[in-house]
Length: 199
Image (cartoon, rainbow, N blue to C red; front, side, top):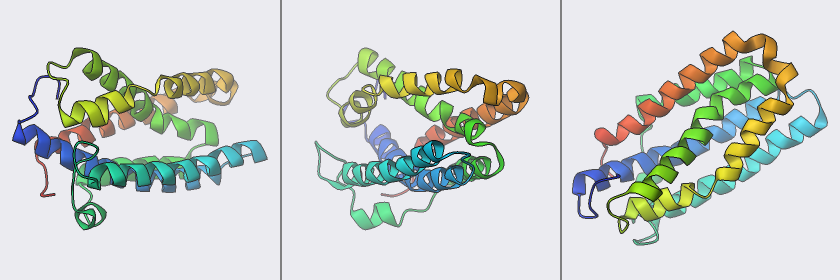
């Protein structure tokens, strides 16, 4: 994505497939937030998680729009192909892990499963925005520019763990295990673009 030109059909095909999988990820993320809400220990934490379900639904709708509206504002994929796409094994494994973590871990510790998603998305997007050889590609405009705007989300996430240090400081080994598995999930999800499905 950093070096490919706008007419690189293989990169475009991989990007489209990744974006469809990311839409499906957003749907599964709402399940994660719902399960995390069930582990809240106070009203404020419950409200936070429920709010994430609501904002997640809005984000999923935005992703569907990005996938389906015609270029240059979207990818122009037929909506039924997006909505009925088969989740890859990488997506299913990763989101199953996140959902199960939301069920099994504490409300605070469960958020570790989202750290690689939030932090890496922003870092990769900023790198692509600043260093892409071609700035006229659809992935530059729809993904790099868009996701490079979310620095505040990365700051908020870091501050959450600082503020809740007492809730996870004695669970460092578990947090490390969750984090490493989530990092691998992100790597595997990106790799789906190398063997794209038909959309």
